[in-house]
Length: 124
Image 1 (tube, one colour):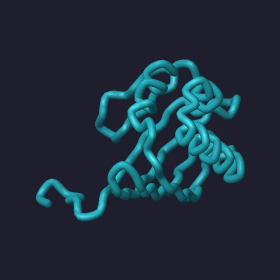
Image 2 (tube, one colour):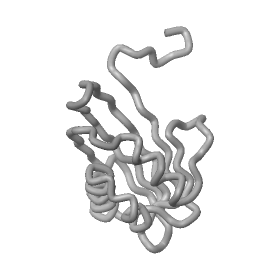
Image 3 (cartoon, one colour):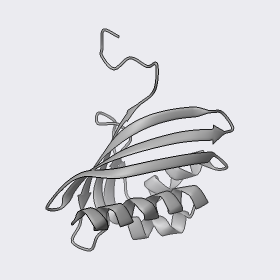
């Protein structure tokens, strides 16, 4: 994987998420992909589980900006900023840790999300 390929994948992810095109999830993820909504969460495994999770945001309006931070072989790290506009305004920043399969789909997705004014330490 290279930076351009990783960014194309992110752009397709955004388009698929924005349009709630659950059928297109198969173009992004392998059949047995593992999708972690946080580094310590139980992973969603497989296309059906990922598709059901994406439908939770049905009707949400959002702006998204992303940049590839690093690529090393099959692994990539992407910095993402999302701002939900409706129904409730909310923003957060993410790091995505991605492992790509040889066919360009992701087999492992790990999300590290942070919200404004939320503690980032146990003591916080």
